Length: 85
Image (cartoon, rainbow, N blue to C red; front, side, top):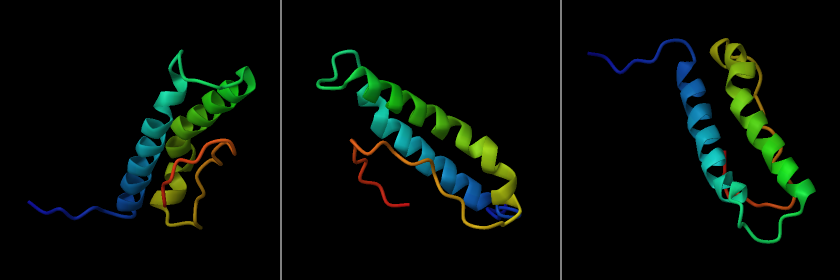
């Protein structure tokens, strides 16, 4: 059995892995007892997480067709997720 990934699906898989890591790194902000988050910051985190969830589906065709570089949603300025992608 071959591990060959057709088309540009390997880019899509990598993007999913990065997206999942970003979601995992923002999980802590969703805890009720996470300290020092304003309601506005919490909403910003929620919006960012939703954008990450929608990111793959919104860009799937671009990845599979090898179009221009696709940028992930911008993380809120008050957090640093320390991830290079």
